[in-house]
Image (cartoon, rainbow over all chains, first blue to last red; front, side, top):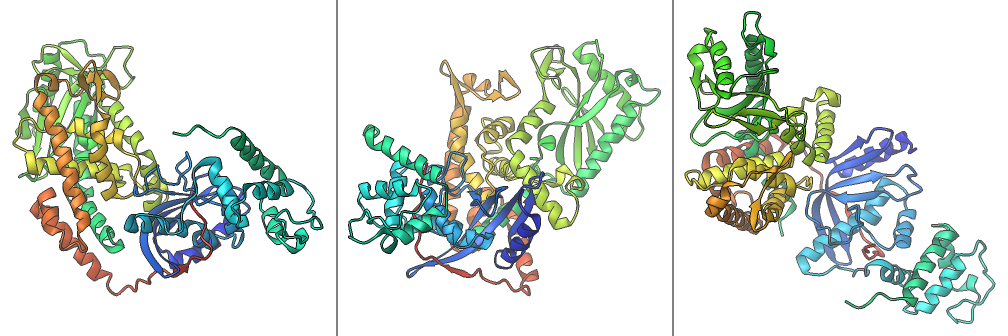
Amino acid sequence: MVNRNLIAHEFNKMKQDYPDLYLLSNGRESWKIRGNLHFSAKYENHLVEDAYIVEILIPNEYPCVVPKAKEIGGRIPDSFHKFSDKTLCFGAPISVKRKFSYDRTLSGFFKNCLIPFLSSYTYKIKNGSLPHGELEHGVKGIIQGYMDEFQTKDIKLVIDFLRILTQDIFPGFMNCPCRSGKRLYKCHGEKILELKGLQFPQDFAAELNQIRKFLLNPPPLP
Amino acid sequence: MISVEFRKNLNEVLRLIAIKLDLNETRYRNAVEKYENVAKWLNGEDSKLADHSPAIYPQGSFSLGTIVKPIGSDEYDIDLVCELKDFLGAPDEIKSLVGNRLQENGIYQPRLEEMNRCWRLYYAKEFHLDILPAKPSLVESLSNTAIEVPDRDLQDWSDSDPKGFTEWFKDCMVEQFTINRQILAQLKQKSVDDVPEYAVKTTLQQAVQLLKRNRDININKDKDKPISIIITTLAGHAYENQADLYETLIALVRDMPNKIDYKDGVAWVHNPVNPEENFAEKWEKHPQRHKKLIEWLSDLESKLRRLQKFNDIGEAKSLVESLFGENVSQAAMEELSKQKSANAHIKVTAPPTIKIDDPIKPWKE
């Protein structure tokens, strides 16, 4: 059950910057935030200002788990990056967890997950494409997400890193799979440790499985 | 792309227009008080109807919360059902029974007018109450709120289910309704249960009001104009609980045509509570009415989209007036200006600029 005082405290801080938001109870101690989110965001030298009517669902395990959000004004079509329950898909699961981990508060969620997504959509409507690209749907997108995390285009390397992440231990002394000649702890180890803290080994194992299945049986071309 | 300020002002103007077309709270409560008094009279000790436990309840747009002021009149049409239990007589008899009792009352008698199937009580410059006598339906396949009303010739009974239709319509907008009620309760610092249902308006209700108004302003004299029950049913099906009124209007006019069914080449707008009933049954004989609906929606969609070309609500004034009528649009814009002046002293801080570092790319499962 989420801590009511924590939510109220974090929400009241947010309200100063985003006054048109309301904290509502779903009954049974579950919470949502709804209202008009008027924001201003800057990426490189692009300034984006817009307002969307949003609904933020605070999960029971908050702040261990990332909140979910929907755009309920009717501006963002379901064909854009959304889950089947219409919540917004900010990025590949591991990347969303990583971004939220930097600041596990409502304010952090807005800054690192929700506002960048919404500002991307505004940018796309104005300029025709997303400002920092998008991932493909499904498993392909998960692979691309890991490629971005590890800054590599080598899918075999992604699989090697994922295999390490499925282990309980951190094999810091092994040679880094990237073939730099360095030990893991002196090379990609820091990244591995960062991601390791975000989900359980079995979660990485499940993703690795999905990726292997996908590579063995790629879906037919349209 | 619409700016934040213009979108906010446009939505507010649309909302104010819908409010100005609606019954205000005083009139609403007045209407309820009046029909409750009629019910008391019909149930009076010496009333011939007393054995039938007459119950009066709203139907039509009054029940749905989508009532709009008729063109060129200050009087609202308020539709009511007068349901009599255990009535075994003929359709014309049920009408006479109710009418006779109303005429016995010295207050009602001078206000009373006999209509085709119902009795009308006039309250000048406010509203008229149309009281339609009915009895519960005995047809098992229909819902337990289904009723029978006299048909147009008073020869036979017609099926109806206004309570059922209202429940369906409310279900279409339950998300918006629940949240708006909670927000209103917070703003008024009351409990949710202390906020009456009629005080809560959803974007569906207001969009339906605006659609009906646009129809009345632009094609009122056209005998082939779309009827309200068809507009309301298609809108209910097309609605996705959007919270932005402008986006709701655009989505409805775009998606309503797709909610028309076709069975063996015949267009159907099914009554959601009685699928055997086709609200569009007259289209077979009058196919131009189907065409009129599609053309009207398409024309309205392009006009609504044109609103996006403006930067300022003042620039959009004549388009808004052509959509919803000069007087009410002007009144709404004036009220928006007054609101802004009243709030001018409140310092509105701009939101902080978030610097996006290391952005992640959106994904889809």
